[in-house]
Image (cartoon, rainbow, N blue to C red):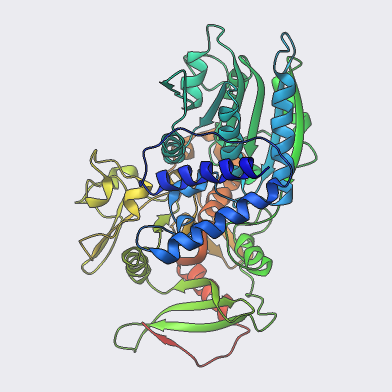
Length: 517
């Protein structure tokens, strides 16, 4: 047992040092199940604590690593009991399927809202199966998330017979590669709500979802029914925990066997109470979207304001949540002006806090050049991504990692969309609610205006005549509002929504305290 513990700790230290770019050693020897395996990880954490204490500039703590985008897909993350159980069931199903030819493809589905650990589980299963020598592919239709998985693949030095494994793929590429009958044991799909559910692929004439079942023994789908944001991925009827297994079975047919495993409901991303999470999620709710007063139900919450450098003008209204030790764990800020929001996000970048400015998709893509900002206020300008500035990387393409770097120009800011951020964690999310989201006083609720969005689907008459479009925009806003682990900063273009949000955070709280800014 002691030898197994030592080897597993050595294995995690290899992963840890490669993540810090301190080692190029790729030889790993992970151990399998053994007695008292539960003592291994606490010992590893103590070793990391000792290393950090001896030289903090070189050895980051695990909490510091959590702020790196690559940590999202890292095997160093601890699991909850529910996550452990669902991983164990999936791995056991895969092992049981080995050596069995001619059986139906087994489709295993796990659902969960944003921040419940779907990517963490997918990553852990992927690397576990690869370590066992099981032929496994990971499908990711999100370019930014694919980069993160590829980074972890490099850290883990995935290879077989001395050759690098090309194991992280877009769905289209995988289906084209396997049309000739090549079969993989397992296909894992992270962010499975990004798969085309209709016959949408011209070259293959089959949906991505159907295509993935053709050449694997086990297909694992991690999805969130509230993150469908494109008409090509949207189902005719809303997916729920009650109907998801039947709808997938009916869609895929008798050639596969569908099993719905679990809905993950424990929140791991947003470091705040359920009260705060529920209030944020209520803004783009699936029913009538109303902005309700923030529920200051105990002494954990306080209200304050931020002011400009002269201390005269209020720039933001702030809800602060503290834990039992009096430490700030989460902040909600409602801004009076977008440039103050942009400057605060920029300041967080400079202090090494992974933070990004993101917006609803309400401006045309031809605005993505340095001469055509989407918002201006005096000398301050906001540009859509891919502007060719500093934050666009060497190839001129906007990336999430580059967007977290501070900008030299303190009056020009870049903003991304849900396309860039879906599936990712940030310390602080700066969200601009654009012109397609308005407040209608006649019904006392938020409304979504089709004609004010730049989304390509807007021009399709079938969507304008259906209920799907409103659902898609609500899902989009929900994705933006739930990215921040430590805070959510919001500015609304619509005056009435901005006023409603401002009043919501201060309506039932009276406090003269303010923070100069």
